[in-house]
Length: 379
Ligand code: PHE
Image (cartoon, rainbow, N blue to C red):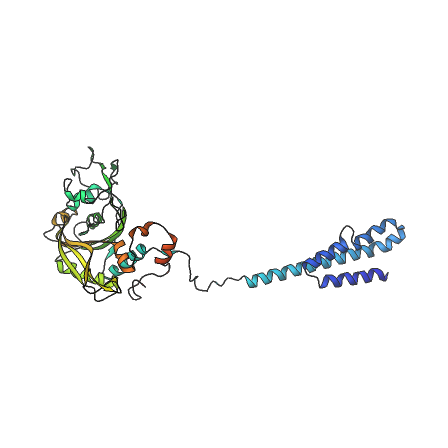
């Protein structure tokens, strides 16, 4: 029956060049409920047994050939499709990381990284202390007794309930007036400055080793306007060694501020001042010039206060476990937010903590841009 052979030839030909959509149409037209091959199979019922014996295998053979060709063609097309997708969707793991990540580094974090880099170069380690601090570390050990007016000056946030002192590590001595009857609960404050880390660093060093640390972190005072926020950031610096003088303090601050502002013409002015925990004490101003109506660090047309400093008070040495007849030290404390404002030109401190993404996009730093001395710390 040439009819069947012709049909087979035609069907196999249209299967051979069909795409996936066309292939399904061919399948329905041939093998579907009212398809041509299905129609032929239906004619078998009306045949005589002899005729069926001849035609049955031929029609079944046609059905199998067509079904097989369709399955083979479909598998081929699907594999080709997958190969094409695999080729176009490759990920080259050796390409550099996306150069434009979404997030930015907050200027405060950036300045903290810059400080760590600058002071690491001078041999300082980074130390930390708790933000919920006991009264003794925050005040008493820093030569600020309970009745001292400096306590009121700090606008301290006090925690309502005394807390169990942190087990073991640097417990304040008994009899400081702030322990409970058993000597175990302490009045807690949100630390008003990073200076308690001086005490913790001295206690941790054990009273017989030199110390060189900076301690950046959050500090808290009940104060709020364009230049004050209840939470702000400070960096503390502490050096303890034998034969330390005011000259070491001045050189260190000068070196630090020149590296930080990335200018050699940074001029410092040390003004005599008072802090209970340093003697003598000095407030440090940096000189600025006016360029196009804006204050720029460098020169000496005007002065801006940037930090407090001094030689560590003998009482503080003793509280930290050092013998002041043998050891000397200097310390300084500096507002990080203010440093960031001066260097990067923001004028409202409150925007630092508003979490406005537009502000962060404008003032933030690229996430992978780690400050290095060789590349310029503010790069
Ligand atoms: N702790 C002082 C303050 O917050 C700053 C300071 C630190 C001054 C260390 C002298 C020495 O104002």
